[in-house]
Length: 470
Ligand code: PHE
Image 1 (spheres, rainbow, N blue to C red):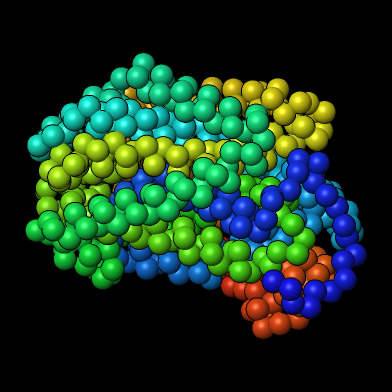
Image 2 (tube, rainbow, N blue to C red):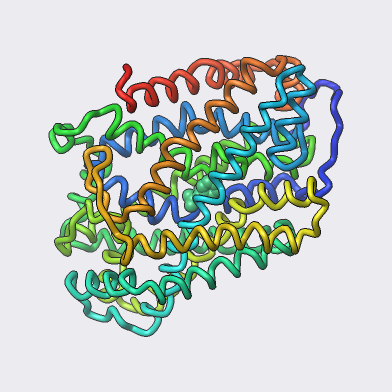
């Protein structure tokens, strides 16, 4: 991208390094975005929220709220070139605004810890399933056996703890070495491999009896199915939350990756590629899973175990299923790994900058905090389990669900809202135009309109509605 770019007034470099190319950034950010959110969270939320209508609203949010906010977050990150906390502080000073803006960075760090704490537990399930599928435990399994195997796993806090600990150690290992070294290579091969394997799964789904029912469920909104729900608070709030969660927005993950982006790279294009890859993976996962769910008589609203119950049945039936199953969970583990890394990075960079810690020590400390908090999630599936109702849906895993709802539906959209307000209402046009790197073009104006009006109004209306005001 070598269009006319206004002369730079602000030149900073990150003490944590820089991506080797724009491509490296796209890969890393895609690695952050594509993860359990697409393959585990998207299908089970779609199932809990009645299918097509939820998917449609989710796509709407990705396009009109997520994409512009992603551009804003990358832009702020690149301009500040520090941990999100210090980036917000520096930029606020530069624009003559209150230093309280750094609280946005703090909220992101808090959200990152909470998300990572339960994310690691779920990623632990994928580790367990690598071995379970690889050992052929699902050969010819029916829905009943698969459901029982899953329930047995989550009922056992010791097993969950062991896998959670393993996964957190893997995350700490990579972050401690610096996210740039291994990440680029890993994502370059593993993301396409995951994509291809999802296509194989879609191929299998096509051969099942209820393929069309699955497709209709996903893509044809059925408003009768959600007639009892409140459209705003029960469907739109979780759909918005999923858009933020899946795109890794609102907590500084994309911001910190943006801070390693070279000055010349165009932010709009990179954002479009990331959002496109992320959304395709989620939709493919949906297409692969729902036909299986219907064919084997599973409950779409089965909750967080949905893919762990449904997909292994398919692996147990298809040719080379043991191989494909094992490979699938390995790739899913990698996808989760590259996301978990980005959840930890904002906190680690802050510790390095402000506490002059070595990266290794900073990562060990931050990782241990997230790991400890994860113990609550481990217990929320067994010893501490309790249920409550949210968005017209019975949630059965107490603290895990609370953490998930609090972060995805509240903290991330709130973070995104503040990013939008900061970037479009408070920063000078000159600064944003300079940083986005596309000049005063239609793209710039469209972006500015979206972050200035559409995104904030969308988030605010849904928030107000959810608490019963609008
Ligand atoms: N986007 C990741 C996923 O879909 C999760 C994530 C959320 C990562 C927020 C970073 C920040 O799995």
